[in-house]
Length: 572
Image (tube, rainbow, N blue to C red; front, side, top):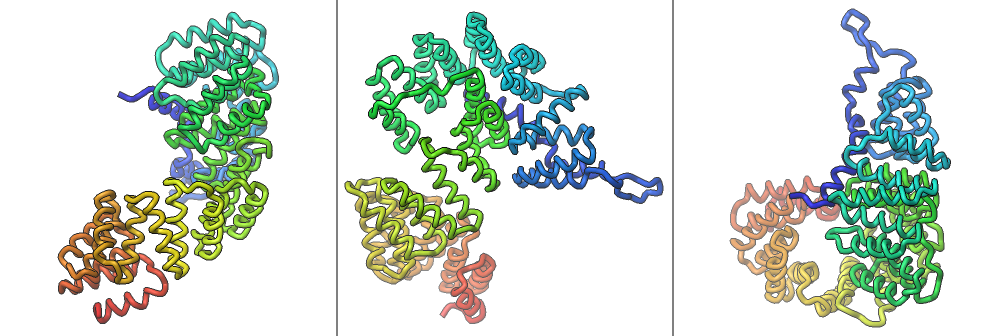
């Protein structure tokens, strides 16, 4: 049986994903762009919008929402009443944050009487944002009750009723929803927000605390709101314990750290719900978070855009949008989302760091490194940026700069602990790549001192020894342990096979190397190793096959000639 979160995720995604179904239907859409002339010949209809429409669909499929929206706007200029284009345009305009064009399309579709519940929900938001509460309630009546609407609508209605001064009626709606089974963490969190807003703090605390104990609950936002309530009630000690409990579970969470810092420095804690618009935006943000737990992106984008429509300064929604767009390789959108985070916000540093990484993904490496360097100077206490500077230089083969950044990171560690094994390991890699073996070996040994059975470190150090022809016996023991820990890691199995090759145990070498090739089929080095082992036991045709395959997998430039010689002359 599926748990409640899985069921809710399917409901949330189903409502909006249906709006994206047509984006891959090029054949159907394309056929509308042409007509027969009666003789069987096909000719393109002049002055029609289908070129722009198809280009827009292509851009949307490739996650370039900006270009997709541009093309759909052009298509609608050519054919403003085309219902097919109107339906697709609505979704794309929302995804790109073009609320004005989206509203025009929504009203046009309503005039054609082909509106759906999603469009009615957006028209509800239009009226809510304008303060037209009676009209907003009318739009709610026009929304369906199926799926997610049955969950959203009661909360929407209750907040509109509150804004009209009808508190008792609003509570009645929420109580009725809470009596229904399912989605307890979602319902109790948002019930807590409502009771918190109207000053019924005992009920608010009850629902916040109950929401936190629901298995799989989205606890971060609940912890933030619960902590703010406790502080307003003068219960700073309880709030402190609440924050510490969750920071222990998520030690890198900057928002909880900021909440704890504000408490310890007597900085006022302000509720993030100040109006009905904030509350409805929060519902959409919660829904998007549910979806992103399962990496369901397009529907999450729609909900986050709805949230931003009501709340301009909803920075956690902007940050989540940036993350989604970055994952979708829509880098302009990612930069826009991250770029909205203001300096005073807890996510500012992380947003700026991610913007630098996005620049690197856009092949603007020097700008990315410059951005990280400036961020490091601006936040000298944030050691993470040094690790990022090391990583970005290492990934781009700038090993000297990477080593310098990692070394600065290590020098700033006052108390070296087990968790720091990775920084020594990574610095060891760049030192090895930079032909500084003695220093690299010392880093690998330090990493193993901190975490003795770490399979990546065991593999890298032992393979290096094997490749240099030193400490073979010790390396073999280490590699056997690494394979025991990671039996399905092709690279580690390859290392053990290569150790066997170096020891002269060719049957064992072939056994491990054949397994490694099956586990990691597209690595040139593993195929090259297997070719060497085959040659050593007289399987020469198979050896040449493996070497040719290795050559097809684009090995390092300086090794191509060597492999070609082996294919021609065999292994000397």
